[in-house]
Length: 203
Image 1 (tube, rainbow, N blue to C red):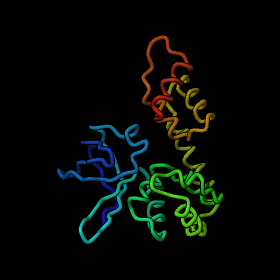
Image 2 (cartoon, rainbow, N blue to C red; image 1 turned 135 degrees about the horizontal axis):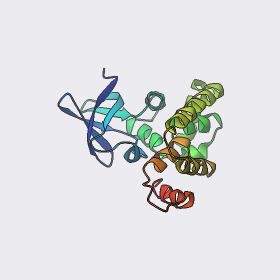
Image 3 (cartoon, rainbow, N blue to C red; image 1 turned 45 degrees about the vertical axis):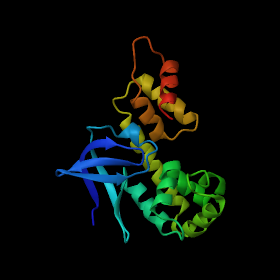
């Protein structure tokens, strides 16, 4: 029904974002991990949406990328996983991390997601494994890394070094880039200082 919404972020709450488009404020339930480092009040944003219709409510779920939206839809296809649990999975794991965890039978990683226990993680792997391929997982991961690299254009050398250091520590390229971009560089700062500040922005 609604493929995406484009408008201004007017409020960021604990479990959702309110976006104003065409003089209407939309409640968008989103995977909030990392949202506050990407979206800020007053920003113009394009959010991909999924409309969930229940007997007693209609809820809009929002995603920063089409990939996240597609993974959310896949998760909804798993028996026993509703929108809230699917959102929990995407709050704990990126789409790339989830794909690799499913393909590697990594129950431990998936069960770290909020509201997902060991049994649900096993069921999720069982039902999603045939719908994912290792080749596609690598292609999408490469694509996302290239996007992150492209976003580094215009970022100072010191920031590039900090992003590289964070990815070497095991953080994803996009998370590292977000944390560094939202770290203010003050006079006299070196790479180590920047790295320390960026690490604080990771949490």
